[in-house]
Image (cartoon, rainbow, N blue to C red; front, side, top):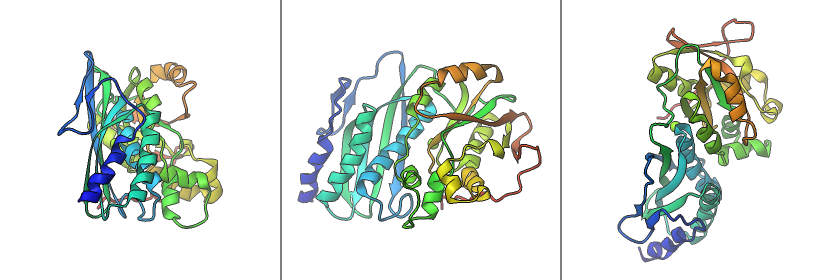
Length: 313
Ligand SMILES: [Mg+2]
């Protein structure tokens, strides 16, 4: 394992340093200071080669995505990301690979002033586990459980792009669609703004229907979603027909957009809060007292199309 010890120094090459890290990489554990009036939000996600990303994915993209999916969970809680730990398992001590991996990881981490405060490296099939920690003013975290009948449902960005790219690996498709799969942009900025206004929130990792259903279950409500309002990118609509695009937007995972609910009287506040943010948001439907998720078209007839399936196991 000498070679592994040697490459551990890559973990310590990050630019971002935080004054609240009393003790970072190098001891048995890290020590961080939590400011008073704040709560710690903690999340963890594992990416396994061949399961969560194609085996031939570039190491810079793997580094980016492993962090992005965790920051996306913090965004869905309204938290400000601050620290991460990394457990990396790889088949051999490949210095070139880990150099590129750290480039992708640290580029995104530095952009969000997130510090890597601990790392572990072991030999085995490629898998990456990141634990991300963020801060939220006490009792302001966004949860899945607060949606009320009459609340409006929104999503950020566009849906289905990553799913399309996943279905067309190694084919020549629009590069922006490939970027959506390999380099998702966690909606941290929007998540923080939603603290003051959203009644419930979740990030879309497994597909809109699956993730919105988590909000409905936790909030004990239902929803009506107008599929004609789903935001579809012009690149996706150029690549495929509208029915396939809708199917991907409803069912495919990996978009890492936010889905959130807002009380109907807060519509103008929301528009004001989210002006000048880095991505748009779209109204897609309404929370109902009646349980279940109803998908319909503009003309109120029920959605008849297919929904792209996503199975974890
Ligand atoms: Mg999530």
